[in-house]
Length: 172
Image 1 (tube, rainbow, N blue to C red):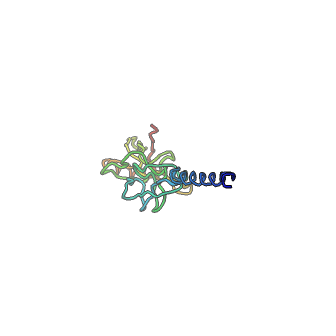
Image 2 (image 1 turned 90 degrees about the horizontal axis):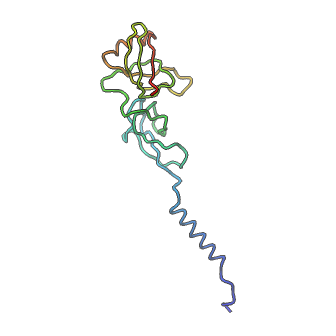
């Protein structure tokens, strides 16, 4: 009397759930995303390219998505992930032939920002670009680097050595 037995609903439901789980695992969202990492030590102001970065798979939502287009806003060690705060403004921080002078820079200054350097003893104003900014470490020295044109590099370096400069950062 096979026709009097109830149909195997439990097996049908179990098979349907198994198929649904298999479809979800195959076509569901990817729990991993690509994220750029430094494959070598990258100095502040150095351009971020495929030669010094690589993408690795990390869990989704672990780090903010970043596109390494531009320059390193701060030094990045080998193997570290590239963070949003590590990518500086613009494509090239230091114009060709310019010199970098180490000076105290305001905390809001970021790599690639345009600045004006006022030489306090003469009143001369020199245009510059932040080459590397103050590190986020509160125990680190408050110095950064500003790229200046060769014509005024020695003048700025002498004034910086005597702490006779003021740095104005553009906010716009």
